[in-house]
Image (cartoon, rainbow, N blue to C red; front, side, top):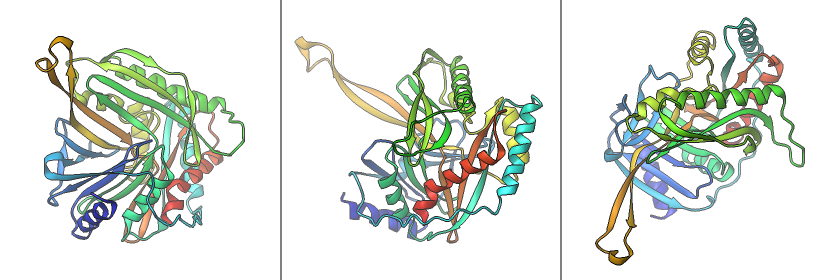
Length: 371
C-alpha cells in the first residue's frame, strides 16, 4: 500500500466515525495503522486478548481495546512525510500559573511532612487547533520526534488523542521483560554541557529502585544499565534500562499492576501518591499518564537446529510480544480545541516556580506541532 492509499483509508475511517490508531515506535521507520470494522467500544480487564490497548492513569477505569481480529492492518516504511513544517509560534498560556504553583506547594508540604517521598503533579492547557486534520498533525509528530512513540488514536465514543511519548512502560518478547527508568527534565541547548542537579538524580533513582523492587516477585536475572542522558525533542532526561526474565506462572496483568503507574508519572509510595493526585489535581487525567500499545501479538520465527537434516528439523517458534508506552507529551482534541497535558515530579528539593517552568517547556513538544 502506498502513502496516499494508507492515509485515504485513515481519512475515511475518521469521516465515518470508526475507531482507528496510527502509530510508529521510537527509532523506527515503520508506520502502522489499525482500522476497526465497527464503532463498538471493546474493553480489556485481564489483558489476555490480542489487539491495541489504550489504558487510563487510573486502572479502576476501563482500558479500551481495538481487537486484532476486528481490525484491518496496514503498514508503511518511510523516513519522512512530505508536509509543510509548523510555524512554531505556540503561545504559552500562563492563566493557571498561580493555581499550579499552589498545587506544587501542597505537594512539597506533604513530602516535608513525610506523607510522601515523591508526587507527580500535572495540569492541562487549552489551545485552539484544527481538529478536522489530526492525521496531518500525526505526520508532523512523526517527522519531528524520531525518538518517541508517536500516535493518533480515535474512538467516536471515547475521544481523539495524539502524542509523542519517549517513555517505554515495558516490552515483553517471549519471556524477556524490558523497561526503562526515565526521570529528570531540562531543556536541550546545543553545545551546552549537561549538568544534573541532586534533585533530578534522586528523582531518577527513585524510579529505578521502584521498578526493580516491583518486578522482583515476577522475574529473575534483573540487570540495570548505567544512567545516561537522552534527548526527546527539545528536552533532556535521565534514563536507565532494566532487563529481566518473567517467571512462567506470571500473568501480563500482574506485571501491569506492578509497574503502572510508575513513580515517574505518579509518585512514591504509589498508592499514597495516587490518592494525593486524585484528591488535589482538580481535574481528571483520563488517558494522560496511562499507557498504550500492542497487546499479545504473535510473531513466528523458523529455526533450523540440525545441519544433517535441516528440512526435517525446521520448526516454528511462536513468541508473543507486547509493548506499552506511557502516554506523556500528549493532547486530547475536541471541538477545535486541544487539551495539552503536562506534569513534573515533585520531591523535597523542588521549587514551585521551577516546576511551573518545566511544565511550560513540556507544552512546547505538542503545542508547537498543533499550531
